[in-house]
Structures are given as C-alpha cells and as structure tokens.
Image (cartoon, rainbow, N blue to C red; front, side, top):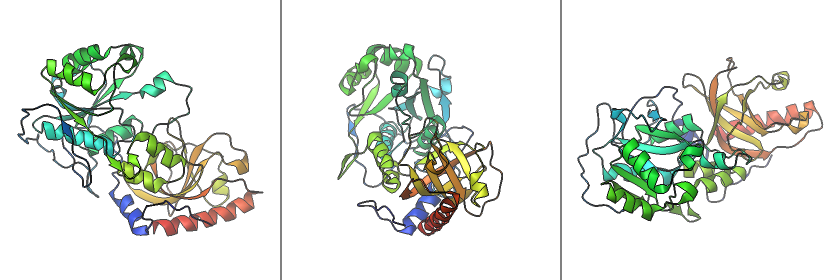
Length: 381
C-alpha cells in the first residue's frame, strides 16, 4: 500500500508521536486566563501606536506562556457573546481581531502582538460566530477548520483569557466600519488596545481596513498594532492555504501551519454496525460544518471523554463499497472497547494513507481495513 509523501515535511514517526503528545486535550468548561505566546521563527509585529506601558502584570493563576505544555491542563477562556452587555470584568482588554478559523501560527502572531503592546491588560480575541462567509453564502460547502468550542480552546491555548464571539447576523453585518468601532469596540467592549493583520477588513461591505482602524482608534484613545503576515517559502500562512492542504491530503503540513494536528470534533453517532461485523468497530462522527478533507484513510489519534488518548485508523468519506451518501468520519480505535455513543470525541489527522475507493465486496473491504490498520500502527509507532 503506497503512502503519500508530503514534500518538504519530515515524515519520521517521532515527529508524529510528539505531535500526538503535545496537542492539548479538550475542555468543556470555560474559565479565564491571560497569557501571551512566543515561538521561534515568527515575524515581529508592526507597531503603529506609541507610548504603551509594559507593566507585565498578570492576574492570579495566569501564565505568560501561550501553548499549554504536554501533560498540563488545557487553557480555558471566558466566552462572551453579547457585546451590548459585557460584564465589567471582561471590559478594557487588549484585543486581537479576526475570524481566527483554525487559529494558525499567523493568528497567534496577532495575539502575541496584542499582548506585547499591553501586557498589563487582559488579552482577548474578538471573532464572529457564525463565520461571515457562512452568513453571506450559506449554500457553500462546509469549510470550517474550527467550530466555536475548539476555536475558543485554541485561542485560550495561545493566551487569550477572553473570547468575544459576536453573533454575525444581519444587524451586525449592516454596521458601518465607523459604527463598529464606536458602538462595539469602544462603547460595548471598552477596548484599550487592538491588534489586527495587515489585511484585516471590517464593517458593512468591508468598508474599513487597517488604515481606517488606525485613525478611528486613535480618535478614541485606543492603541493599534498592525501585524505583518507570517510567511514561509510558499508565501503567507492562511486559513485558505491550510484548507487546501487538507483537501489535497497533507495533514502533516496543515499541522505545521496550525501548530497542532487538525481535528474533527463531534458526538459519536450510531451507524450501520458494518465495521463491528467486519471485526473493526468504529466511532462515527458527522462532519457537520467542518471542512471535508481529502477522502480516504488516515492514521489518527482520538481525544476521548475525560481526556484520554487512543490511536487508530479512520476513513473519511462516503463509503462507496456500501453505497454511502453522506461524508463522515469512521474511526477504528486500537485497543479500545468502551462505549462512546452520544459522547464527544475529537479525531486528529496525522497521515493520509490512501484514497477512498470502492471494493468488490465486504471480504475485500475487511482485508483492506486490516492492511490500513497495520499501516496506521506503523505510522503512529
């Protein structure tokens, strides 16, 4: 069985094992933290305001590091949805702006810049839920890298103690850029400093850009840091580029740009039990609003309820051998016999093993699954 090589990426087993161990586990509760993140190889932020303080203070129980270390509890953040009624404790932050789909290394550069400019303030991220593209183009195929719970955890892992997840509806979409700055950022959230990417656009018909934001923020005594993109040999790292990598079957390269393996999170649903009959029971997850990556078989790990980990092999696709019509994740977890129905798990992709294909019958499928499982064990060893 041929493996798919990822050009320019190290494919050794130790790297995959390290990614599995370092990826943060799921959290279902929310709390508060306020930390910045630093990492080698990132570009520096472009500062457009002066005179900022650098007190470096943090509240009790907070760290100044970003990504939680392996074995540590996952960072938590407080999620605020209604900008009209933000509690006093969640106002007055230094705020990173963006959609943050995937919370990739470029997004984390914006968070670091927001924290570096005002380390004396709580660090927050402002994002929109649903994604504006889902609002304006609901007929598009699902494309999300992260839904809100996973996004909030990743933002917390990058240091944000507060996540303003503003409901993106017709009313918010109709706000002019000027009104958004005045009513949402200034009056609603009481922001004291902002950070955004150089290509940030906002307001009705994307009427505001970084230059507009700089002038509007300065008029209200709000600082602004404009952050250049994080680039590599292929150009700027972006959510669009990561989606393309996943759709082309390169989860290792996507993981490098995300800073962690990409995952599909959901509640395990009942299937047709064919996997069990074939000797390979599976945990089935609907893709829902998640991006559909390249259809095929992957070496995976899974975060189980309670934070435990299991390795496995998964098929993502429509199961052509049994005439399936809906794309989903079917993960067979090695050496696991628990009941996961109705419970939330996250399946993380580590290596693409082969494309999905139709087999002449169930016996041929059974034999191939055995080969796939062996290949996944070898890849994850």
